[in-house]
Length: 245
Image (tube, rainbow, N blue to C red):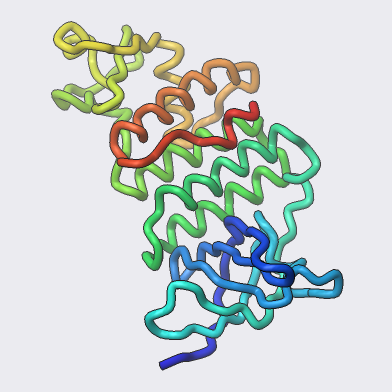
């Protein structure tokens, strides 16, 4: 059985296929992550091939066929072209890391409206450059982990449940998350978290303002999160996009 659907989607990835076609990965609002082919999409006059490009927000007309992993895109309408993302190398790398999380971690065919809206919103913010790209990606990373069931609690110790205050040192365990000072003494391979770094971590998680001069600390948070995901998700080998920055 087959049917034609129009889906709102973010283009996550694309690659050339044969001499004339493209295979793309879309994160659809109602379909979740799917793969599809654009037949003839590599031609210079192929409108659909130009519209279906990484970072683009689109309406895609898709010919769905049951029991097929690869669907067929017959047409597409461009809703948002994020030109600003493409104009700055650092922004491109961090926005690419957001797409990479969807590509490498999110299972196929599992719709998540909150995650779709969150991805759309963060790409819009990358495009408008209203905050440093490191901070935008860190905010999205923490939101993404929450949506995928690996959220890190910034109010209570992730080991014993003790309520955090902003004072004093904290710790971070790659298999646990943020921990209190008492649990630091009992753990091994603990990464020490200063008061200042904890406040930044908490601010990123809760959508609070973080000073633009704090990008070096934000990068520490990103390294912690990267190793945290490696501990929790089999096969995850880190974000290649971030190796560029």
